[in-house]
Amino acid sequence: MKKVILWASALLICSGILGVTGFAQTSDHAVDKEGHQWWQHAVFYEIYPRSFADSNNDGIGDLKGIASKLDYLKDLGVDAIWISPCFPSPQVDFGYDVSDYENIDPMYGTLADFDVLASEAKKRNIRIILDFVVNHSSDQHKWFLDSKSSRASAHRDWYIWRDGKGPGEPPNNWVSTFGGSAWKFDPTTNQYYYHFFYTEQPDLNWRNPAVKDAMFGIEAWWYKRGVSGFRLDAVDTLFEDPKLQDNPILHPGMNAFGDPYEDNKNNTKLPEVHDVLRGLRKVADEHNAVLIGETWTADVAELNRYYGDGNNELQLPMDFLFTTVNKLSPPEFRKQIAAVDGASGWPTFVISNHDIVRSYDRYGDGEHNDQIAKVMAALYLTLRGTPIMYYGEEIGMKTTPPTSKEEVKDPIGRTGWPKEKGRDGERTPMQWDGTVNAGFSKAAPWLPVPPTYETHTVAGELKDHNSVLEFYRKVLKLRHDNTALLDGNYKALNETDDNVLSYLRIYKDHGTVVALNMTNTPQKISIGLKGNGFASVKGLLATEKSGANGDDVSLEPFGVFIGELSK
Ligand code: GLC
Ligand code: CA
Image (cartoon, rainbow, N blue to C red):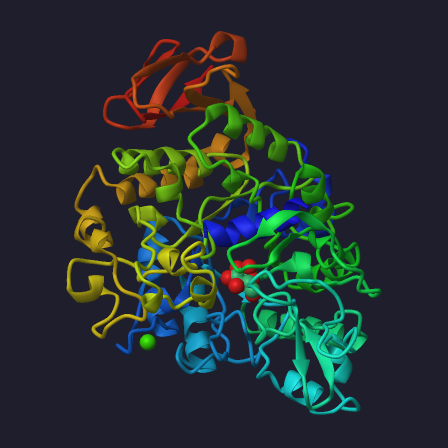
């Protein structure tokens, strides 16, 4: 039931436990004496390729564009880039409708461009993560074209075909998360096929061993080409109840698409998902690769299931639990952090992506947005776990949704207008500098450059020591150098404080304190140095008017203080 709500909200707003043993099967790849793997120390950065950098000035970002920005990313402190789908695609869902899993869409370049990107990235110690759309292909994929051609075709059973209940009646009541019935009638063979997303995204039939083999083969093919892992798209949706039982209706009313509110219990999060994840993980382990999951977990119990028994499924199921705290609330964050910190695998922190409203707007109060962006950076980049950044977050990019239905590019924004404006707002071109189109392209970009490029660009912020970008660079540097931030446990401080979120990261004799004022008034906290076994504190990174004096930390409104503790 939570699942439905989470999918819906995604569209609408558009310690110790890890231990050395949890990763025993890959410990030969450990990067430190704690048995940590490369992906536990890495900072990931999501690139939406259409919107990052356009090298050939056709208004759409591309692989050469990404390659041209590798120095920027390296300098920022990024260790791995996750590129949203760049494979051949009719672009109905902007790449999440793949028509060939082993190639690059010409609009983004060629396989040769990919190889250059991979080798240039490698020179800089930046790893490449691709986006594996495992639930569905494009309806233009050769598998589906064959599948729909006849009931006897070789690929018929690669997708989910069923007879209708009666004339003009789909097999059951399941609705697509993108609007309308999840079944589309195909007159050629007089059957319906199933699609959880757009009609152009038919669901693959993972119960068919041939589908499994093909997908595992694609996974290995990219590893051999230099890829270090995958972000697995929409994993919750891989399996459906074979009996096709109707979904219960949650409550009366209609969503933005005019569909009933369904509990997707019969078409999401089926237990069979875990067999597939174990299979994908086996292939990943052969290549020291990481699997990140788009997992809309409702609670930590569900999150734990995605890590698998003995950590044999996803290393990094994305913790969207964090993105559900949509206000600057120390008690809420504290609760979420404690929950994830106690999970059975390594935490992952995400605050923005290409499907949800940017963190800048979710937490910003309209007046102190830049300060708040720094508070959020100091939070998710200093926790025990792996952060996944989203392009533009580091410069304080703002969500800029279309203002009229005619402007909308994301199809759900047209079918759902005005309740659902789609996801264009968080996918606007990266704001590089103050030149035409913010330096993204010399041609008109596929989505307009937001007016905030006048105040927020990479070039502008690199020159301003007080900028959001400079703050990100400093925290990211600290995160890579500070032993307690790399390997320390998380310990909450001042757990009843409603205004300041503060915590320690402790590794052996090393301690680091983080204090974040989430209010617009000055605040003070005590570290409790003695009680925690330390004698003094020295500032490592703080906003202008925040600092420590003995055991006390003073914070300006939305102030940040990060300090090193000594024995
Ligand atoms: C995931 C992607 C989203 C896409 C959907 C269908 O949720 O993040 O952008 O539309 O899957 O592939
Ligand atoms: Ca281009």
